[in-house]
Image (cartoon, rainbow, N blue to C red; front, side, top):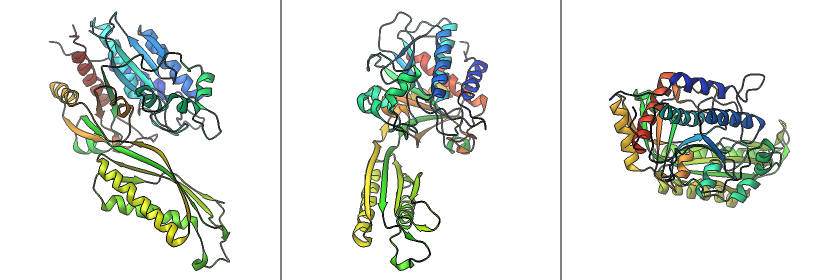
Length: 412
């Protein structure tokens, strides 16, 4: 049987075209959810999907679905990811999975495949969670784990709601949630980490995702003159925040190797060079594939903060921003990734994803798995994010073979 491959030039061309949308005068790519740049990115995806002969539907949280039904009415096989980005982003995170999904469907159609069920390419709204919280919002609403009303009412830093912005850019859809309940979901993605490249492995068969705990912490101290206030008499909220950051680092390094902890956002008030900070606001991101490890880390952080209240007199407010449990993917689908990759002569290894993905939400309603390709230097959420074209095409071909088997559609 002839080995069929996707149109690599077409896939890479679309990745480049989408990556050009949302750049500022300095060339930085920022395509946040429900912005004008997001609208243009969505317009491009819809245009390509319609050109390929697919029907496009938009649900009430703005998720995009490009559908090849081929007259079938069974539960669809869904593939996809997201096209919103972080600030000053790379071109591959999320976008690769959506455009590779579109390429797989187009290749199947061009080869005369006759699937026994519809195939849907999904582009989920606000996966990154940069402008509106929480992240993975579109897929969480789609899967029923986050309320639609709360998502649409989510506000950005300017107080604008997601619902109003979706209407403004023309992507507030009318399709009800759950109309397209998939029989299975597959997400192709760059690794966003260093493991595949470091080990020289071509394909990652992702069998699990880490649990994630996000918190916002506000420490209240007392603002005072930086020159006249003795060190022993200060109630320095900035120093208190630094103590929490150091505690988290020691906790993660000294705990299970499966725990990571990050303070990625920090602001001090009044934020003046000659004033002892009276308030510190920061975020805490902790992750582990082991729920017990994550829960223990949360417990130890809470105890540390309580000790700062009791011993040092700081006022401390804690807000849980998001919490997702670890996910195990469907074993049969993970084995299928391994088998089709090996059949193409590619090296493959099982792995856990350290990042959150839409697949994390879809796993609650359908058998789910993910395919990873290497990330150069393990870099992502960064303009230096890169995966070689040959590796991107290789990953898409693994997805093609996997989809072909799952829809019982041998290619001519």
